[in-house]
Length: 111
Length: 117
Picture 1: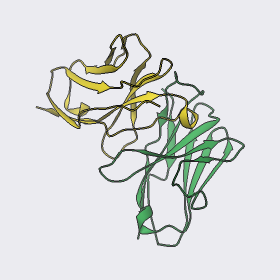
Picture 2: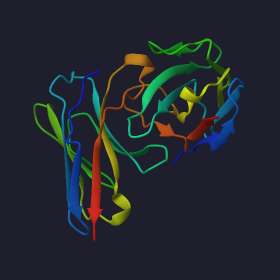
Picture 3: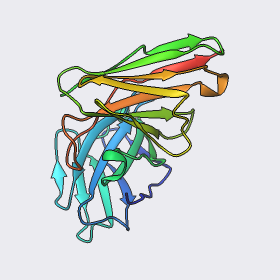
Picture 4: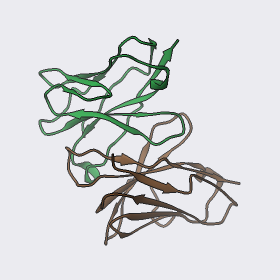
């Protein structure tokens, strides 16, 4: 599975959009980009995933560049409850399609 | 959405004893479940892939005789930490998906905090 690179930490003001970047320059054509988040001492929570088209759901939007080498997760109106570690994961077929977590980005939403 | 439940949420055990952690998919069947371990301030590390009706597949460096995995039904996988030691203290998390593949959401349990004293 392709590796991902994320900034270790980011801040965002409450009510503003949070844009979390992710680089995955070695991604293969059939690998999906997933985003999960983990609030302290809880299991990861699914946010969104995509292959090459931009995706949007009730939680967030996922923007994937045309060459698929990077993506951005957008939380349109961040709240204090969005403070968490966000993981960008490229999912291939290694280990039976397991999700392999990198270090993620620690997002702090401030009042 | 689909739910994966772990039990117990936390457990404290004495060094040398064994601890069993259960992972259940509550509203779907899963032929494959995954077990992770997370140490403080670190990311989740995949330990093993649990396969219903067959042996688990362990990641490199994970002792299969220490971390026994049983996937006896399509809704239940168990992880037994045998002869636990303080260095096994960690946050253990399982995940499962309704179907296999790259384009399918994986659901995670709430995790089990193991403390070995």
